[in-house]
Image (cartoon, rainbow, N blue to C red; front, side, top):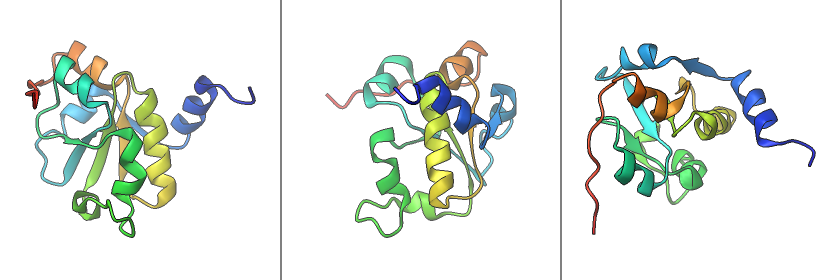
Length: 131
C-alpha cells in the first residue's frame, strides 16, 4: 500500500481549516454558516444529529457540490461557510479537502467529529427513522 488512511487524513488536515468543538459550537445558529454531516444515515439515526445540519453522505458529496452535476444541491451554491463533520473527523477531513480542491470556498471541519461534539455536551437532536 502506497498510502494508508492515516497518511491521507494527515495530509488533508495539513491543508484544511479545522475547528475545535468549542469553535464550531460558537458558530451554531449563525445564518452565514451551514453545518454538513457526511455520516451514513444509519449513524444519524443511531447517534443523533447536530441541529440544523444538512445531511450530505460522503459517497454523494462530489455530485452534490458540483453545480454542473444533475445531483447538485442548491445549499452548496449559497455564500456560506460550510463546516463538515463525520463520526471521528477522518472522513470529514478527507471530504473537506476534496470539496476544497473542487473549488468550494470557506470550508472547514470539526476536530474529533460528532463523537467529540457529543462528548463535549454540544447540542444533539434525535434523527427520526423513515421506517
